[in-house]
Length: 219
Image 1 (cartoon, rainbow, N blue to C red):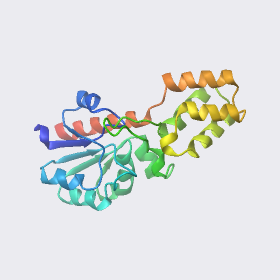
Image 2: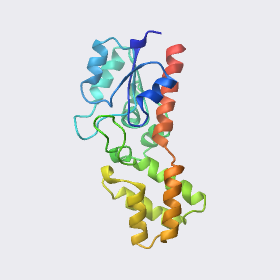
Image 3: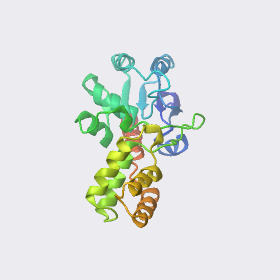
């Protein structure tokens, strides 16, 4: 397998170093408009889209992906921007994988802000927590008996009403305490749970994208 055959756009849902330990490929920063044309010119035959730019630059366009698919290039998406685009373009042959892709495809989630995060411009690391992770982590904490179902639903609502770049477990829990949804002690326990046992859906789905591409490349 030639290294330049596969290109994957990521860095936020999973770091390039960790991704490289799973799949040998060329890794690029989160995708934005124009990157697909560059990849086609450079001869890549498999394009993996995990992360992408949502609001700072023009997002990757549907027509770019369709052009790649028509050229016989395999395009796999999941995790973040890749999940969103795959849910819209699987009818054209884009391959979607993971829970987030399925949630978008089935209309369980619809908004871009479900997966959007603020990132470090140099490393692409997330500086805020994605809504999909917050929701699943809070639901898991509820199942563990750390918070009541009503408090869980209200905290999810607080998170959804917070601008995507400002979402953090600490901020959400502080608001929960202020609104008397949680005691200070419950807040402390919940924060510890969220920080140490986060349900990182985006990363789980990013790994599924890498595994799917490995399967396709070696199949």
